[in-house]
Amino acid sequence: MEIVVMVKQVPDSQEVVIDPVTMNLNRSLTRNVTNSADENALEAALRIKDKVGANITMISMGPPQAETTMIECLARGADRAILASDRFFGGADTYPTGLTLAATISKLGKFDIIFAGEESSDSSTGHVGPGVAEFLNIDQITYASSVEYEDGYVTAERELEDGTETVKVPTPVLVTVLLNSNSPRMQTLRRKIDAVKKGMEMWDHDKIGLQPEWVGVRGSPTIVRKMRPIKERERAAKKIEIDNIGDMVRELYEKNILKLEEE
Image 1 (cartoon, one colour):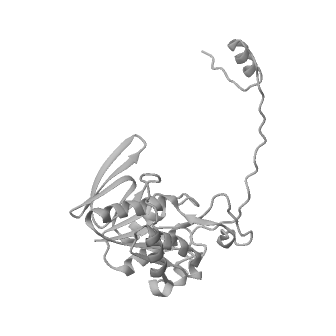
Image 2 (image 1 turned 90 degrees about the horizontal axis):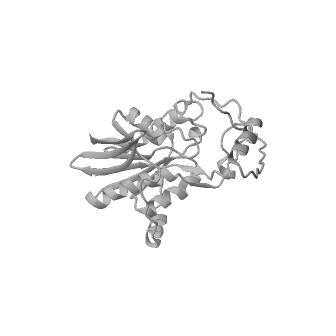
C-alpha cells in the first residue's frame, strides 16, 4: 500500500518578515516550523501503516531549508521524503503549488491515499489539498476528524457545522485532516539518527516535468499589489463600581455602550 503525505514548512506566526520589494514572505529571516495540521495528517497515515502496513512518502514544495521538516517527518515514521525545490517555484500561489505537488505525486507512480492537513497556518486557504485532488482527477474527503482503511476503502468522519458526517470512498483518494484531530507521535532518537542518514530527495522542475512558466510567480493568477501592517486600535477600559444593577445599566446606556431594544 502506498501513502503520500503532503507537508509544508511554515513561518512561526510570531516572526513573520515580508520582503517590501517582492511582497513575498522572506523565509531566510523567519524561523520556520512544521505546519501543525500536517503533523495530524502524518499521524493519520502512520496509524494506517501500523494496522495494515504501508509505505509512506512525504512530499513538500519549498526552499532547501525545508529539509528540517522533511527529516522530522522521517523521524516520526515516514519512509521517504521528497522536496520539490527550484527557484522557479518561488512566489507561487495555491494554483501552481497544487500543480507542482500533483505532478510530483504523479511522477511517483501508484498511490492509494494522499493525506494533507486541512490548511496551512501561514495562508489558511485550504486550497492546496482539494486542488491536488482535482489535478489528479481523484476523489477527495475534506475536514476529516478520523480516518480508517479496509479492503480498498477509506472511511472517514467529517466535522460539519451542524454535525458529523461519515463517508466511505474507494481508493485512490485524497484526505485533508483536521487540526488537533489526533495526537502526533514523538520522534525517537533512533529514528532521528536514521532519518539524518537517509536524508531527503530534492526534485526541480525538470525532474518533475514542469515548464517554468507553469509554476511560481509566472504561473500564479493571484498578484499581491501591496501589503501593510494593521494599525492597532486604541482601546480604553473603565472600571464601574455600582451596587445597583439598574444604575449600572443606566450608566452603560448613557455612554452608548449598551443599546436597549424597544418593545
